[in-house]
Length: 330
Ligand code: UT7
Image (cartoon, rainbow, N blue to C red; front, side, top):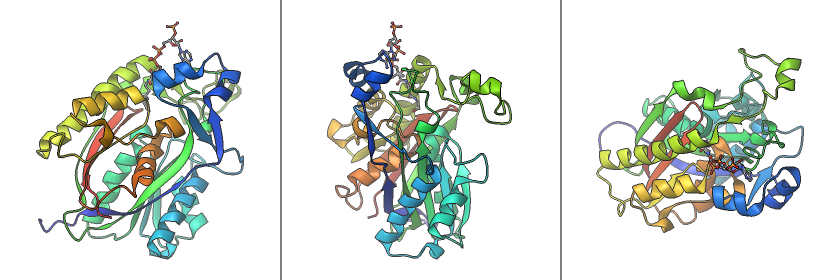
């Protein structure tokens, strides 16, 4: 191993709201049906944070609390909190600061990262390099999204897709080769209009007009996003495998962003992976944006073994996409 400090994932935590929004309930809201949703997306139900006083910051804090408990460490030991989100509690201050206050991580410096569905992977890349710098020893990287806050429940093309949730990891310096090994990240800003929340920012500040035109909800051109996501996630996953001389047999797990089961299946096929090695929980949680990948790690953590070779892959608004290769350290 080179003298470079590498980061390892040393704990995983999560938070999911209790309320389960089923396909059957959505059938009562829009012209859709369970069969269409399951066959076109793989989703059966999602979680919704109903309490109007709670949002992404609360969920991020709950995920962080679980990590602190697992590691039996005090919040004051955390050096950095990065929250990946497209549903921040406020335009500012950062949701990471809200979470910091809730858990009492008084020594942490805290900021948000906006990369939509690739947010967790981007934040992991930033956090991992902060560990490599030698300056930080304990970095919390959390994906938290209250998608129900920006979903239009009269739009059948988007309201069936998204759910609420948070999950994250603790990064610490690795002692051996079981660490984050490599990553490839991409962006394509020319395509930003295909997946966007138009209202509420400095371009279209909130006004009667933006509310009347439903500009505070998610807007998605489903088909082009689907096509590009399928190419992008598969290409970057194969690229990171080739770069690290990995075959489909070598990879123990694929942890894909959970946007559509058909995109996940296509990625696994291109990687030549046995379907049993693919983490899938989209059926239960839908697309929780920045939380999907760490939620998978959380759900599978008891089945992962030290040294397992894992590829994480995501594609999302921006466009943003990427893949990370790591060896499990827990
Ligand atoms: O996570 C970030 C990145 N996002 C993604 O990766 C999402 C990518 N896109 C997708 O996953 C898919 O495009 C969707 C799931 C959003 C849509 O599936 P699709 O197979 O691409 O459907 P489509 O948009 O081509 O629509 C097919 C038909 C249309 O009817 P017509 O025009 O053929 O009569 C839609 O109006 O399905 C109709 N449709 C629905 N029918 C029942 C669209 N939504 C629904 C619905 N229920 N909820």
